[in-house]
Amino acid sequence: MCADIIDGNTIASKIRAELRIRAQALAAQDIQPGLAVILVGDDPASCIYVRNKAKACKESGIHSEVYNFPGETPQDVVLEHIQTLNANPKIHGILVQLPLPPHFESRRIIAAISVEKDVDGFHPCNVGALVTGHALFYPCTPYGVMMMLKEHSVLIEGQHAVVVGRSNIVGKPMSLMLLENGATVTICTSKTRDLAMYTQTADILVVATGKPCMITADMVKTGATVIDVGINRTATGSLCGDVDFATVKEKAGLITPVPGGVGPMTITMLMSNTIEAAERAIHANAF
Ligand SMILES: Nc1nc(=O)c2c([nH]1)NC[C@@H]1CN(c3ccc(C(=O)N[C@@H](CCC(=O)O)C(=O)O)cc3)C=[N+]21
Image (tube, rainbow, N blue to C red; front, side, top):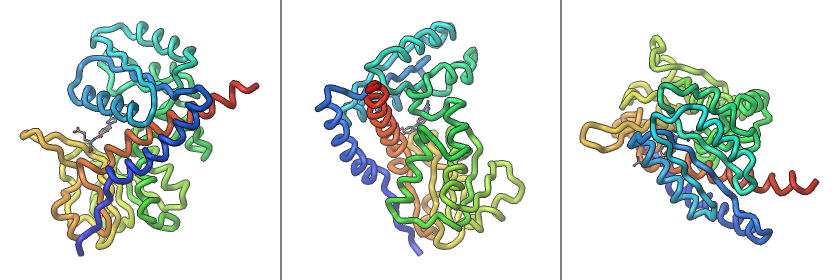
């Protein structure tokens, strides 16, 4: 068996075309969706992502502002800047690039973002809303994964989904979203004892551990849908995922590549959440 590839770039451009139409409809009402990105420090990977986000904004008709603070900026300065952005009617979405330098308390920074502008979906209120099935914003990476599954008509209800990874950004929200869609969900970590025993029974396997090529063909059920959220830079500078793509693609039914898989979808769903936030702001202002 050789898996079909789930092409993140193709699905992303299709969604972005729809987003441009929504942005045009907003423009006709004199509204341009606005996204503010806060980057603290100069981590090279973060700089690449922030640049990609700014480019995607431009393509989707979203106004974007990037605030790059030096790594040694005091937390209070960033907190104050978030307050200013919360009050700025031209800004509909605020994203603070993670991870933050060690002297920051990410929890406090995220909690300072207004719930209506939390396009990452990381605010504790939005996390709680997701748990109860009333999400205001779905976190961008798991949201992108759900769109990929939908695009390929992957059956979720009643299926066994195994998520490897328990981060607040991917593993936990991903598990909740699969659960919300009727999957039987098993949450594992990279340290799960006899991990293969779980992954081998997965109809849908989502891997987000940050451990290069940790999922090998023997750990995957024939015909399974395999979603690789990992982005690891190798010594030679190339990118690889958490899944050993070359061997697993021979056994899986559907598989996402790295790069060109989940990454472009993450950025696209950020654009989608920002446009959604701008659309909601109109109704909020109507009263
Ligand atoms: N508050 C916050 N929200 C995030 O959504 C967030 C974050 N912090 N911190 C870092 C991670 C990582 N992330 C990626 C987005 C796009 C690609 C992407 O487009 N990747 C390309 C390759 C890009 C490259 O060459 O590195 C691809 O997979 O094809 C990757 C990673 C968002 N993150």
